[in-house]
Figure (cartoon, rainbow, N blue to C red):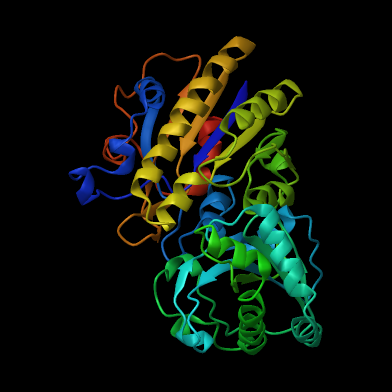
Length: 413
């Protein structure tokens, strides 16, 4: 038996007025997922425990079977692990986003944030801009003063590590939660915030005049003219996935360091796919091929993660969110299931959203999400399509950290 987890990041939502009261899942043309759902268990699961911040960090930890109330130390340490960054005791890890701020000649606090992803900046440009920043004498001196080092990723998501410091009272707002707003009230505040604000201020002054950003403006793109620190945390550790799930081996296929970091901390592996971007233009077919290859190599469990629905929602792109869901249907599930069937080995698939991401707010929401579990040995199931509404007609799983054991039927033992 093989087990496959397909995460459509942030694809669950609430009814949208522009869709005549349907959700994006309900409005999307997804015949392959819906046909699977008819033969599956379709229900609802609380991936985000009550009182826990809603995000992919807490949601995917939960889906993998790790109660975030017990194992969560912050988002960035998970991403650091996925980026090959080894934290030491006393280190503080931050996510360092490339962001797009207004170009007006005003203090940093008066600027407006237009994009949490530097205008969906390409990976090579993001790395080039960070190198440009790190070569600046003022920024380099300030980084050294505060014990800050930077680890670059081929996306807008970089990792910053501070040696020592105190974040016990730090408040750092996720940039995707404050789009199109003046940033002053949302800049890092509290204990440990002074170094972050100083570095963000210098970064904006340096990056505003970077040649790459001049080129981006000329070509009609937003400039990646700022950095934003958030998702702070300390060293994280997780129990072994293999020991937790009766000896089963684990692999993750994703463009997002967070997911590969959770897999790494659990003792699993990550498989890189050329052209996997974390955006709607990602290499869906390559992810499917990598999944099949991983199963052929002996992995018992593979997580195939698609970030696109979440990114489209943060960008306020309703059409893009629907298209991303449809791509998961037509370019992932439509290819994945026949290839699994061709292998001739029994399999079970869990399709799930790690959390809701709401078009109404462009931010995450911690309410329960729909799931489906398909078993190749069974041809009878819910009879319903895969939507939030139909999920409510099936079983409700209160503890999201049990959903993977449900997929593997370990809760029947």
